[in-house]
Image 1 (spheres, chains in turn blue, cyan):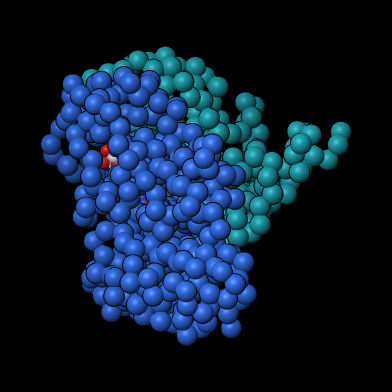
Image 2 (cartoon, each protein chain N blue to C red):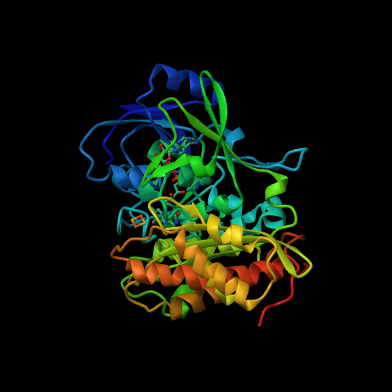
Length: 292
Length: 168
Ligand SMILES: Cc1cc2nc3c(=O)[nH]c(=O)nc-3n(C[C@H](O)[C@H](O)[C@H](O)COP(=O)(O)OP(=O)(O)OC[C@H]3O[C@@H](n4cnc5c(N)ncnc54)[C@H](O)[C@@H]3O)c2cc1C
Ligand code: FES
Ligand code: FES
């Protein structure tokens, strides 16, 4: 039995924002795989507001201008199977299948993953590397927030009472021409939280790096980008030496700490190593030759 | 607080008031008598409570009872035929010795049933991945994997567009 004192639901977004404006204290619930787990052993009363009946929030589509639009209520199972995501932004397909186990993926949503604000969220590193923007709606209107500005601290995100995340948007300039790779490093191959999440994308021009992007999860209190390494890579030769230097520089952007899963030193070693491995695969996916 | 919902379990229709605080697992076990769904961890980790909701394997311990509104639920009690003959998947689990204490078995049989009914083919690695949401403390998984493989091999699908279609 969960300590739920009230349960509300809405069929449309308009109804949802109106009800939330009236009752801003309601706690939103999507798949419930974070909300319900946290309710175990929680003393205070919780009134839930379910988004599960708003079917329009489950849609994944490509807009006319090429922007990929992922509804916040799309489950990880749906994200994994989606043909648009698989073709255009496969690092999110890879991230989706690495998350939880089948029964969790069947119910957990990508919007819930982002709104939970966990640095270990399996969608986070890929969405950082893809420069995702989040569409947030309330009764007064909507706004777009870059994902880097959305994560504020462990479990803290830029949502105000009354806000609903409706869409995750990825612009064509953030995926067209890029190849990528996602590595979830965990102690077990299934049903485990990442010790480190690494998403790398790159765009090549002949034998030089045009642009690279590195998104990391669990390398700090929030997911992050390795901007120093990304800046360094611009215009450099594609070589083992360049990739090694990128791995070293990536560590400088991290704020890893020691937890029971791994020490700070071990995580930093993983960042240096896995960024290189990820980039080597990403550059092949971007059409480059394999580095040996 | 209670909410009226309509749903079916193993083809039997229900229209009842459910407590908003309850999980589907509690509804099934404590009020409707479907005790085949087990409570292991209660937090989505072990899969002992898994049931099929509209054919999709779901952990019923972290699924609110009110969400069952409009859904078709299948529990382990609904897998064998009405006359009590075991399904092909159940037989495979028996034949492979994939059942010891049996606590994980209802969930595993249901997930395997969903895989068999999908009509898709799975590599061994994919099968492992599809079964990874079920913990078994007894068997060591080899016999379970064999049972799942056997369940899928033996499947003769009648849908023409399925890779298993073998003609009439
Ligand atoms: C057994 C188990 C294994 C797990 N494994 C993993 C894993 O491997 N990787 C991983 O990343 N996570 C994992 N998780 C955590 C969890 O499943 C994910 O974070 C999931 O994506 C949360 O989504 P949800 O739909 O269940 O969110 P909910 O629990 O419904 O909501 C999460 C939070 O987001 C808010 N919220 C949800 N949707 C919206 C919205 N549209 N607008 C505004 N706020 C919203 C809620 O109010 C709540 O604060 C696991 C959880 C369990 C129980
Ligand atoms: S009891 Fe539901 S997953 Fe363990
Ligand atoms: S047979 Fe005992 S838990 Fe699987």
